[in-house]
Image (cartoon, rainbow, N blue to C red; front, side, top):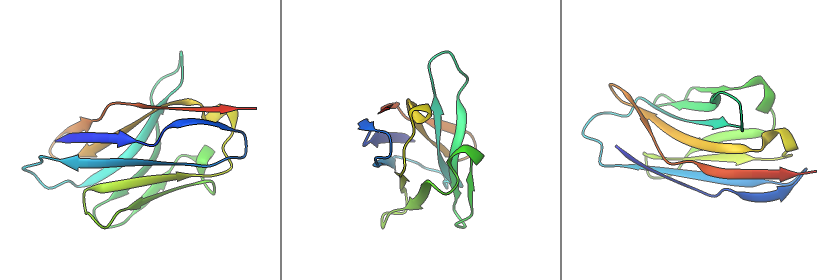
Length: 113
């Protein structure tokens, strides 16, 4: 599976960004897709995940501010990020779960105060 993420950038606190991730080339069913992030010096952490059935899970730190959704193309997901905070600054990674986990390249999100 190839994952192409886009949409990162720099915004001021309170601003919004939308990340996109398109999966291609999978020979297996994608059971879930999601977003993780990694800030400098910290471990990679879950941000949000969307199952093939439409179930969602969010990190407590982003609940009410971020929304994960699926595009018209089944293997495309979005992460709408609103009311961004400086602590949201990180490299955001898209992943997809088939019989194993696939990772895309990261996209940088920088939130300034």
